[in-house]
Length: 607
Image (tube, rainbow, N blue to C red; front, side, top):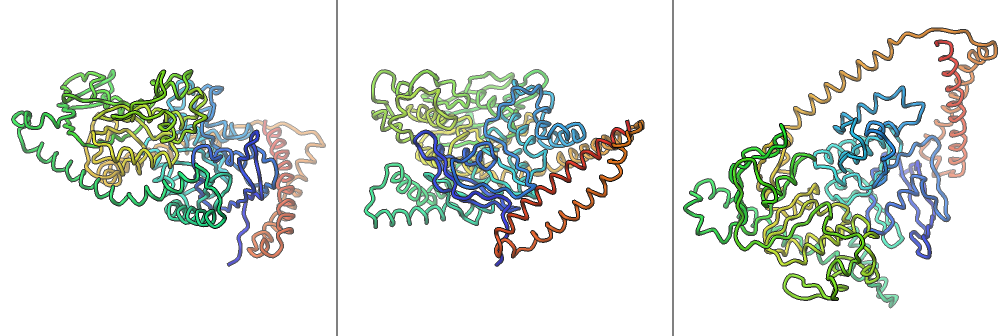
């Protein structure tokens, strides 16, 4: 099989921060149409590698080759858009200054596609709105290589599914960092695993990642044993933890299916039995009872005539678009907020632990040690004492980090610390509001293991479909119009039954409206009347000869492109391939300069 020429290449690059080498001899190729997922633990250097590919960060050594004419667009994880007046301006900034005036309609198209509130200020926009604007900004220029760093963070499931379709239909190459397993499974056809400075490459998508990772780990264990090397503590945890957890997955799945059947039976009984008569018998199992609750803010209905009975051991996930009222529903069900009508009562002897997505429990000036255990050196964890260092290790913190202030932690590390705090408390009712944001896959596996062994009741808000499928017995779906629907089963079943039929009509209407507006806008621009003025003799002569010069350059470009399209050229003569590619870039630059000059003269004539 003939080797296809890459559009981007890294060769033996290395990068060191301080005395710590982040990469050692990393090489990779990106081909047109590649949909690459870049995975690895938090702190492994994934975001830095993406910055190197984008050109934002230069490597210490090695070679970087970009095929001439290739346009790269990079969406960083937490972009700072505070300098822009509106989200519409954020989207427009993805175009260069010359394009912005003539191609403003593209910003409107992407704003409508992502349902972005264009006039909202970045200073007051939610995390989801900022993320959608950042995605539109990266896509508006129609790049050849699209680099996405955690694009699903803060997005609701509906928008994530929309992004999946965009990435799958994207004609160029995509490199994406994400910890959302469902998203990666749906969009990727290649995998890069960054582990302790080494990049492993696999020509299969994320679906094959876990088995492939196990193979690499097993090979490494054998190699280290043969060489009588001491396994590092981090590597030892990786080897022992990753495969062991996966062997338990099938047993967990069977247990979850049993719990879902129990939830179906509970709902069935609730529909047929007089709850008031049975109340005394089930009182010890009752966690929450909500009857006909409603809540509005102004004219907007958040929850409308909703009833729910939650019993001990239920694991209920709450899903819906951003702004549909998921956090409000949690506050209503836990009596942190009063309904406008109806009532909520909670069972006796409930010990609730609450994970707040805004991390209000964390003091940025305290160290991790003091955050967990105050003045002592032990923390009381669900019935027994643990040394604070040992407990921090459970959540993948190093002993050195124990004395660091919370302010030094990354977003994912702060979430891990929040989980350590929440899960240490002795509780029988766990409320988790977006616990999976910024967590890497190893931490998600760890959290899944802890929740699987949890004997109490769980109320969970998350946009991570894989995580929801593995944890919850039923889901509450909030469409955003005040209705709340309970479904027993996984997200895919919920989507097909309730979400997809509703979205089809909305999408059709949105596309029709968008197309109509854009046609009217383009037609209006074409109908703009212009006035003509005379050019100088020199400019008039240039205006006449430039088309021939451009045509000659275009013919040279066409000839070189024909040579480069030969699939055997790269394999047979790599040096010639790169020389022609460089010449092609020079010719394209010259053509662009001449075209711009001719367009400038054309505009002067028509002023």
